[in-house]
Image (cartoon, rainbow, N blue to C red):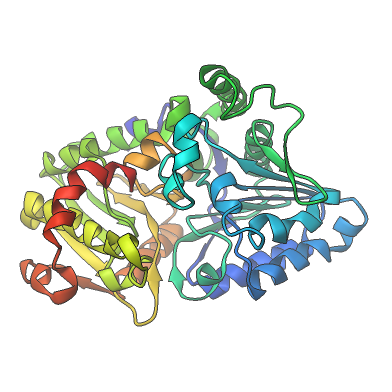
Length: 442
């Protein structure tokens, strides 16, 4: 395993600093507790903030924090411009604007949505062009890395993954610096709820020169990346556990996650086992080919059943999105045969949004990847994604990571050839045809 991590920039930590969160309710309670107790900083990055009771209570934990009231608590909040402004007048901005006086509320807008495309694409549809998709939550020196957004379903019955890294100032600084770097290239919420480009954003993301904006953004992100050291061998750091932030920002040619996964999927090591989870299973063609051509390891896939897909109850064209993912799963199943097992999450009245990777080989190490990416084309090429690679040889932590994976699989059913004849797995012919053209946008 050392050959795939030795060149990465990371942070050695104690295995006891890692805590796995298993359920949405526990995720929400942890967010509220950490927000209430924070003393020096809160940095939150999400696709969007919901507008319900639970979301407002979470924001109240921040605004009611004594250190916030006393101007001792630095607050940074980043969400996506398109998703965060959708549904005016009640949207993420309307909930967050009260934090403006003592915090920075940023909304990132992709430079790829511009001109006539921006004018003609309606809400929701315009989000296929590119989004701020990173999900991490920093409270002082504690960090939750996740794929979950800050909204009601993710706090109640939408299963995701969540890992809490405790007392890790270097990682907290990294993510805070990252948000501030993105923020200087984004819009900022004003006291009246209106949006204005940050004073340090010298080029407008969709009205200015696209290449100039990309150069500015890339330079600022690279500065943050270069603050971390290349760790090399773990043994040289007197630790059995380390973490490595991996960014994917395809518009800006930042491909840390993509480069790492190509190396990982290319490993021809007999006896290894890899489990890949994605609520929206739609791997890139490159990943599929690497997995299919490697018969030396066991591969497990955890994904959402049609009923656990977040679009299952959608109306209009969106109601066909679960069928698109069924079609993709079927193609993958037929291409890989017995070397791959596909598990579909199916828990009554729950949806599945979990994503990540667990990997074991014959060494004493285990790795997991947790964060925002679904490992598809849009994750590689269009969205801002942040992952955390965790590598450990600590037996107790390895057991906990296996338990986390097993806790997801226990709510799954194993896919067989008969699965695709079930009523909710029948894919309309037009979806099969359209998938060739649209799957790269999901």
